[in-house]
Image 1 (spheres, helix red, strand yellow):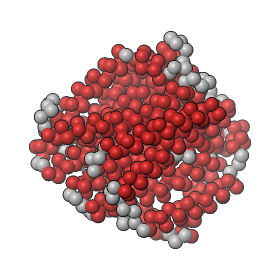
Image 2 (spheres, helix red, strand yellow):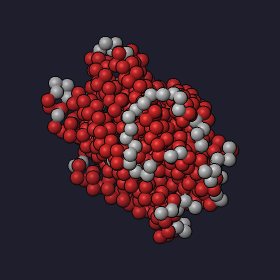
Image 3 (spheres, helix red, strand yellow):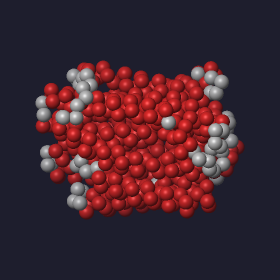
Image 4 (cartoon, helix red, strand yellow):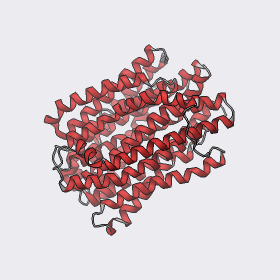
Length: 517
């Protein structure tokens, strides 16, 4: 099977699993909104949940995506199976040691960590103490979720995308089960979710071990720093740790600001960011997951032509999905929030406030998606330093805009600052890719983008005309909300594809989505 068909099949599999996971994720969030509402206890949970996620993400993105995966791909090509297993053994030992240190540090110093990122919470108040307690539980899970990510990275490199991409499905399934059946067993119900998150990390790790064993890649960790590939990983990982930390620090900065805003602000930002993350997690992350090993192999083989084709394939597909998704979410923010979250303890006021930050996040979807794709172009070439510099610029933009916008737009200002910094990050990365001659945009890319924009404008006009006023969604039944939201989304997709066809794509539009050339 050639690379085009392989990319199509792998991307489709990853995207399908991500769609299933995203659907379950929104079912999970709908249940959370109904049970917990936008309360101080859920504000505490959101922060306690995101801090360990941030640490795990830093290890996963810097240590595995940016450092380990490219080196493993190169080792797979240039070395024999025994040397590959040895490299995996040394890497897993190094990662395990680092994770143990981080987990112990996080648990011991959890009060100071929480106080640092929640200065607006009353000192030693109920909300702050709850945040510390929840954080300690979920910080333990850093060990298991990151080791599970290591297993996923190995399986992805060896062409097994199905099992790793199904792990979020397992996670969301367990959390939904806990929310429905276990919350009544706890005096403070939110603890049921924290323990379920810890347990899900253990399950994700254990489920992947048989597949590694089947591929003869399940090896005993042996610690050493003498392996030249390990030294290469460390060399790549250190600047990457800084870079990924910078990119994610924007979220932590938002916590600092939002903790000083009215109770519920953290929750409103959480739910609106979840809506923004939907296209990013399904499309951009799926494309980046599949295309990175291909780019790494083309770089290792000095195959510049196919490297450029694969990168262009990813960038053009990012534009195709991100531009209409951004506009669609902006226009349908109110109906979507009301339908998904506006029930139970999540009040109409919470819906309106979440709608504001959702519109602000929608502006940045193009930037968030393009950043993931462009970053893969640098990671494949084992260039982790330059994205660090770009991320640092984006972080400064985010902080400056937070100060400038929060006083006027409150939590929505924080969302808008994040979106604008994301667009800045993506624009600089793309320009640098071109200037460094890592990427040569084909002549038809600009014309392709113009057609996408024109089709999106037509879609937006029709959607604006047919969609009821967002306030009408606050006082209607769930059935009416779901039926009308489904109609609006399907109509928007239909109009977009019809418009693309009118501009010359017609029935070849689906084929054009998956052709590299």
